Length: 99
Image (cartoon, rainbow, N blue to C red):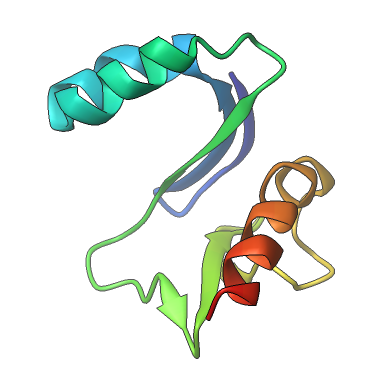
C-alpha cells in the first residue's frame, strides 16, 4: 500500500486487491468473490480514499480526491498525484463515454 495523502483525516492510497481484500469482504462479499474469480495480480491497482463526514465526493459530475494537503480536488486537476491519475483516469474516461 502506497499512501499518497494522509492529511486532515482524509487519506488516499494506491493499493492492491490483497491489501484491501478483508475490507471489501466485510462490506460487500459478493463483489469480493467476483474480484477473487478474476484473481488480479499486483499489477492491478485500486485507489482507496477516506473522506470526512459531509465531504462532497462527486462535484459537478467529477470525482473528488484528497490532495497532499488534504483538500478535495477533482480527478482532472493537475495537482492530483500522478499514480492516482495513472490508475483512475482511463477508467473515468471510459465511463464518461457511456453517459
